[in-house]
Structures are given as C-alpha cells and as structure tokens.
Length: 287
Image (tube, rainbow, N blue to C red; front, side, top):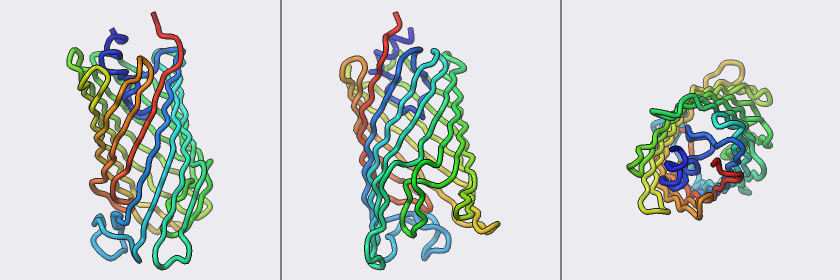
C-alpha cells in the first residue's frame, strides 16, 4: 500500500526535506538532497533598540546590503523501516556592506553540521514520528556587526514532533512539524542565544503525473538572548511562505524550484530567496 502511495504522489518521500517530513526512508535505502539558496536584500526586520518599532521592515543603516549564497547537502539512511539516521552539511558565502564600512564584511565556508535521528511511531491513520537532532559548532564563528557568521559557536539540540498524512486517492499530502531547540551558551562571547520554538507546515498536490505543487510555511520564535552574565538582548522572529514546484525524473529523482518569501520577523534579513533542489534515492526497492 505504501509503495503505491509513494508512486502516486510523485515520490512523496522525496517531497519533504530530510529534516521536515514525518515519513521515513525504507530500510537499506539512502535519500540525499542538494539544495541551493540565494538572497540579496537591502531590508531587514528591525530589532529592539533601533530606530523604528521592533518588527518593522525597513532598510539597513547607511544603505546596507546583505548577500547570501548557501549549499546544503542532506542525507537520510533507513536503518529500519521506522528508524532513520541523517546528516546535514551546509556551506555559506555571505557578505554585508554599507557606506560606513571601508570593505564589505564577508564570511565563507562550511557551517555548523547537524546530525539527526528520526523514529516513526505510527504509519496510519496518520504518519507520526519523533525526531532529535544536534547542531555541532563546526563552522568558523565571526562576531562582526552586520554579518551573520557561517558558524554560531555553540551546540544546539532539537526535539521535534512530526505528523503527516496522505489523502490518497486524492493526489494530496500534508505534513506538520513542531519543535523546540535548546541552545547552549557561546562561551567565547558570553552569550546565551535563547531557546527557540519552530513550526514547519507543508502541503503538496500532484498536478500531473510528474509535477507537484507544494506550499510551505516556516515559523521561528526565540526567547531573548542573554549577554554579559544576565543582560537580556534581542529576540529573533521570522515567518517564511514558500510556493514550490517539484518535478519527478524517473522513479527516484526529483528537481525542486521555489521562491521563499519573508512575511514578518525581528532581527532577520527581509525579502525573498531563490531555492533550487535536487533529491534522489539509492538502494533496492522492497518487493
């Protein structure tokens, strides 16, 4: 039954990101995805202590401009039909420039690596899974004004509940993730970045045999950061809405094209991001 649902929904298992979908990879199979992000913006969502109400979308000071390009490799391996182990390796190329800087602030290199384990509890009437992940401070950390560094300098631990459902014979699926991220202190700069809540919702509808239309909503809300032994600093907020098209190439590979729009936030770059992805599966199909 599951095999036919996967085919009928244009490789449903590959439709969701490795860190998002409640579905697990079949035992002995490996699912991998390469994703490219690109953003250029002169606006951000203003934080506390700046000119303007916190959360207002406005230009960076001194005609500032932020640029970011990123490549993510994600992989999941089905240890059993119910248990996946995964890894995410990001690479960033970022810069921030304004009239007050003699040279743009730049940071390029491998970012913090994430490892995860996902266990499926139920397969019907809905797919229910629990996921735990860890972000390791493997990327270089730079503490410079205007720059989002490729590495954050501390460990994070994610705990996520995931629920998904196929509405077959309708060519439709939905997925919802709700998670909590425990963020440890960055000892280098005496900063506790504040724990985070996050929600990811996704729906997909098969338009024709090989083409799927997807919609994604991502929400992140943080507790206040704490610096210098007890002073409360900024909070982070961001909401993204992403329409996407997914095209199936054969039975194992998909190509994804999306545009990610920011809707609101605080202390985050505003604007849109171009997203391109390529996903495939290796391993023998179950008979």
